[in-house]
Length: 109
Length: 111
Image (cartoon, rainbow over all chains, first blue to last red; front, side, top):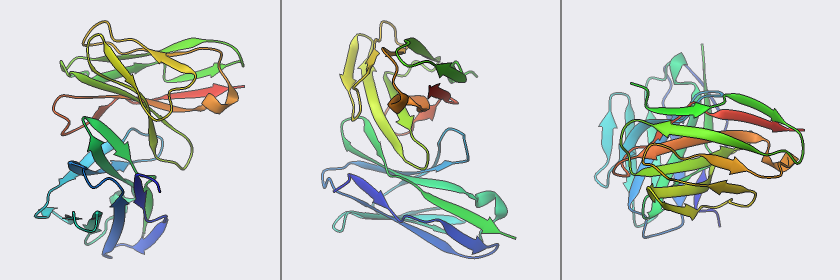
């Protein structure tokens, strides 16, 4: 089993739609969780950290379920500029960041 | 603010050639990382360092070497380049493990 798995995608949604991405991780001792965004041919950039109580940043909401080893990202009111690949990232040990394969989102006009 | 600087941005190598990918950060971060990303895939860790003089292997270290003589620099060496090393390489740094700062990447083709 891979350390971090994500919805395979791609997701094609109309502007204004709500879309949710799922991620699972295999190491129950994982400490920190993140969502990164990567635009085509660019470096990944931190979108948001994911906390146990869940957290929200504008139109983005992240949830963590440690018991199920599951992380989610919800995007409300999708914009064209949200089109990107979303990477789930977990730190299973020490300061190592393990990346999922990513889920590509295309927001259509 | 320079952040993490990688050079070169693009490179074409012939099979068997060697090269060094340079990475420098000016944020005084202890942790530095090298990742590779193949088309349509996630990032895979090649090597990482938790401080000057300390390096360790990641998931895919074969065919690569690193050194960390200073806090700022973390070069990645490719010896005897192979077509399987065609990829985009990203260097990153972190201070607390809370956030990774990435360089802009190096697109490497081995022909």
